[in-house]
Length: 319
Image (tube, rainbow, N blue to C red; front, side):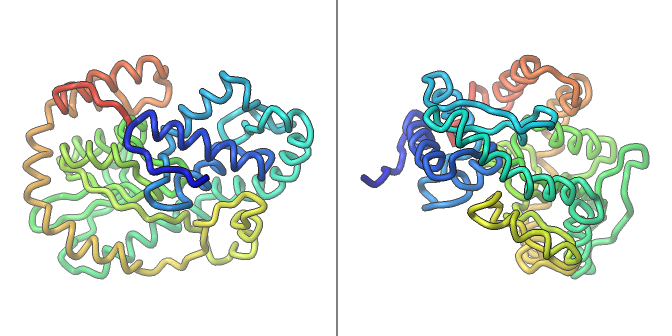
């Protein structure tokens, strides 16, 4: 029976639960990034629950006893080394499957954590893409004590660019978002975020704040390591199909964004940024939402207050 397109928050959670069970029946075991790749980034566009919905669905299935958790041996416990499997596959064949997956996972982790192979690659592509438009004057990596990945001046307006080349989707309360905001407040620069994936709720929040975001839809690596990406991409292994080796050259869709969308909205976004500055200073600087040490409970409380102040009412993450 075909899964129906959801029309409510509960419907999206139900769809995510059904897709999780279907995937784990076939894949035996998977970590959260693999599940996001299969559920949030694959399949019909109108049947892709976003990662926060997948998390809720997983919690429900675990609570019902349908899904079990197991960790990779000899690895520090974390989101990427926590694997999920159906109860009937626990502990075997799930443990055997996890052991198989850890081979390409460890290669992936090594590459993703090496700046020249991963983070710097997307930064260089972004820099090359901005270089196609002479109206942008590169002004370095500022502020000097905690720099953005690049800053530019366009028609007397400063732009602060942050680049995130990792698998996690960007959400409004992600600490990295608030670190970017704090840096841009210090420079009075309009923020521009380039990331692999940006959630719908994030875009709704950015639209209220005057922040621009560009989703690259790929995690890029240096061409020298292309031969190491095969098992990372392969559906039967990690299944990160968007992983790709790319040279540090201008990227067409990003160039269009830089040359057209960004200049067209710059004035309106600067007005929004100025209007929201007191609110942003409160949460980015006074409350320091960019802190990596903030407790989840504290972050959720700040989130509720921020969303209420921004939209005038509580916001349910049902996008």
